Length: 417
Ligand SMILES: *Cc1c(COP(=O)(O)O)cnc(C)c1O
Ligand SMILES: [Zn+2]
Image 1 (cartoon, rainbow, N blue to C red):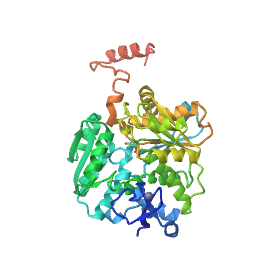
Image 2 (image 1 turned 90 degrees about the vertical axis):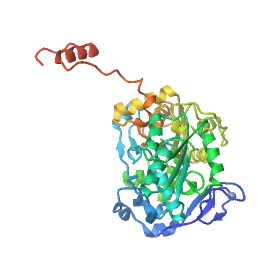
Image 3 (image 1 turned 180 degrees about the vertical axis):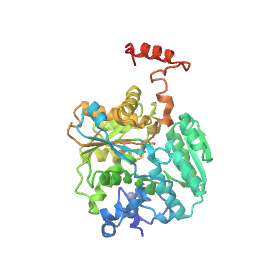
Image 4 (image 1 turned 30 degrees about the horizontal axis):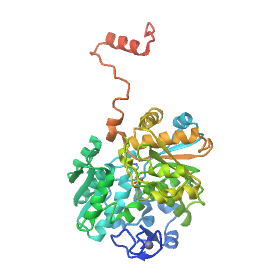
């Protein structure tokens, strides 16, 4: 049972059949999946969802893919953690962390790939492909392996070691391109018109992008069926950020939550901030940038959904911020030291921007906030390995330990202990 009935142009509204296509033939606007919301409203309830599996497939009637074709390696239904220590550190009353580091390939990309590969299988594709800043490559390679499909992943050649190995282990055809993500994406767009592959973020992008809405569905359910006052989410292409807002609105449309009034704040790295820079300048039209940041997963200089992200800021009364490399590292450490969550650089961007937005008064102390932590820290060890306290190194003797500890803490060990 599927409630998708067409693809619809986001600009002119023309409708197209549910095919592996992504842009409007008339105006070149991006295509988006259209749903029969009345049908969904009839088919689901809070109870039916709560009785579903502990994965993103619990929201099946709201998804753009048929669960019959799913490749389920355990994506979604990740923890929403009440972060009181971090809240105190940044100056908020109530803060939640949506911890998407615990997905099967340790990033939120498993959500979007779950949709793309299910649709690709339904369309009859035999090979998957993607242009990636690292995490998408990991997820596409893993899901393709689990489905027994051929896989081609294209990445820039300067990615973190963990992200390269994190694709290689699944044995895809891994292609490293001399150039930036935007160069990789351009090549893949050309390839997609001549190769019979499902490029998850190109020809099946309309289905792929919808997977990010599950972050909103889960958050609302985990909060007891309501939307938060404020969201802080990272932005690369801007897709995840805009789809979280779409997800809250859709839950209202199908009668599961009250009308959401969530203010949406987006987070970028200062070294790749086309969307935040446009927001600060008060325009909806961003200027592409050449990325230079440790937050490689967010390093998209020409963001496909940048315009829609800026519209979402305007529509929700939200905003945007950016963080320097130093602030990103501080953000990663703050999250780890207050909440025990080791996030990758993108998580550092989110926490650093959250902190700045509270400090500058753009987020009020009493706004209940959800921060989205989208990828795990072991993938970006390079960013922090030289920023941590030195371990104590000794031979296995108690006296040596006592002396080393005393030297470190500069407090004598009390006698008799
Ligand atoms: C891809 C990615 C994002 C954001 O992606 P969008 O292109 O904006 O949807 C955020 N965090 C991490 C860790 C990512 O890999
Ligand atoms: Zn159009």
